[in-house]
Amino acid sequence: MTAPRIEVIGVRRGLRDPKATLAEFQGFVRSRGGWGQLLDADHVAGRDHVLSAADHARRAIDRGLASSGTSELELLLYVS
Image (cartoon, rainbow, N blue to C red):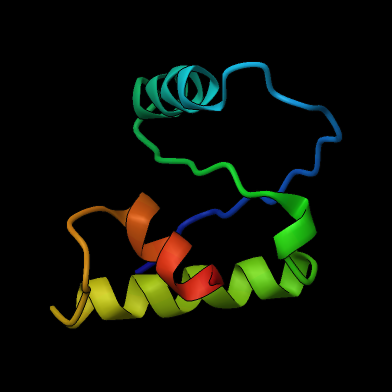
């Protein structure tokens, strides 16, 4: 089994409407068979933090131990 490709991209920009931006972003990645999440860089300790959270989220989902119903929310739980 091939591990899913994970991209961590940093962008510095304030969002006028974070909910609308998130909805547009998630719609875009879902239309291409993926999923995505936006995170506030002020609350992330770097790329490794995000990759570790993604790995923990994937494992919880694979084992049926996820606390949430979506990959996006499970990632948020582990990032926090």
